[in-house]
Amino acid sequence: MFSAEVLKRFDLNGPRYTSYPTADRFTPSFRAEAYGAALSGMASRPASLYVHVPFCRSLCYYCACNKIVSKSATVADEYLAVLAAEMALVSGAASKSKPRHPVVQLAFGGGTPNFLSVTQLSRVMRDLGEHFDLLPGREQGIELDPRFLDDAYVSALPGMGFNRVSYGVQDFDERVQTLIHRFQSFDQTAQAVKAARDVGINSISFDLVYGLPIQSRETFAATLERVLSLEPDRLALFNYAHIPERFKAQRRIPTETLPSIEQRTDLFLYATERLVDAGYLTIGLDHFAKPGDPLADAYQDGTLRRNFQGYSTHQSTDLIGLGVSAISNLNGVFAQNSPQIDVYRERITQGQFATVRGVTLSRDDEIRSAVIEAIMCNGGVDWAVIGERFNIDPAEYFDAAREPLERFAEVGIVTLNERRLQVTAQGKLLLRAVAMVFDAYKNLKREQVITFSRIA
Ligand code: SF4
Image (tube, rainbow, N blue to C red; front, side, top):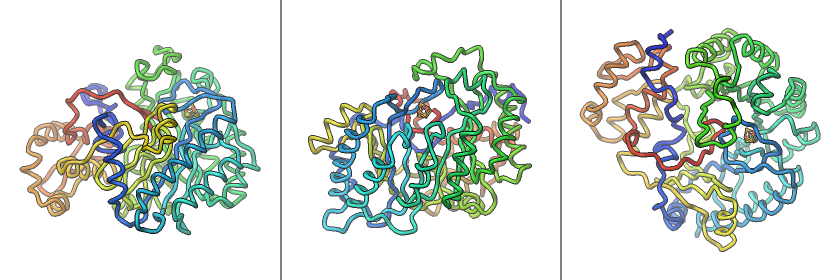
């Protein structure tokens, strides 16, 4: 393991690079018209769809997502009407003079998608089916909060096409749960897993978080053992990033209760070792999968992709995001909807896209994106592949990266030769820092961040 000194020297909290440029580099000068033009010129290949459901019933203090805490079911009805109008707008632009755009992958995230009732969720599926060609055999997943779930809800999912579920778990220790204001018993989670398996949903993922208040190796080990007893197919192990100046809810977590960088590193390494012992394969930065899971296969054959949901097995590069704060990535642009529900509603009801920020990718962005994705997905870069794909001499193009990479090599984070940059097994913990070497925006002032993923 690296010394604390080495870990402190390099930035452990760099971006998770679910996109490049990262969302905090999108600019307000990117106009909704540019998004419309990108949709109109979209390739006819099947796309991925993401639907953002922003509502939650209760506030978790560690949360960095775009969400609205509410107890009212009617807020969702109003939202779904706007969402349907957005589907019509988007599909109208994407399908101009073509049939409905085909969709091979569909994901619901939030917030809490199961804030929607079964009736409301069916309504979204019906609206999606009207505006898009939802291909048979598609991958269709949903993030579910086990605290607000019953068997009847889960049993309705396969009929709507869902074949994957992801459960937020975080930590089963009650003292940790009190400090993060998320009370979720092991029994609730176990019942949610059983309910999914009983109706034939055999792809179950868990999100765990390390670096939460008062977590220790002892408490986290107990959580891990309980998690392993439920045999999830996939696990994500996110590092909690405490940024109270950006995320108001985090101000309720006393900083002095947080584990030190050494403790967090120890938690991550311990959990990795335990999961590997239990037979899981490590995937990229922070994911684990059972052998034979499509994610593990994609990692092993080098076809893994990175997107806003983390890692993906899909080669489709076109992502249409629907809903407040959702990001689309298609036809050389990133476009993000307003994170403010009033602005989102107003724009869509006026028949306009709700885009408020984005970026049109330059050639340099595309080259760097390919390198960063290779580091995040495969733990290394084959320079011949990059050279051939972009018709460049990588050594010359990335001359400025040589010196920082040599510093990484000196302490064993990477190995370097003319053909390949490889992150070592130990260096995996510093994957983000290695990717940052290729980030041309890293020294520029960041825009205000609108987060999208569960953890900053
Ligand atoms: S962590 Fe999930 S459930 Fe909790 S407030 Fe954030 S989005 Fe809602």
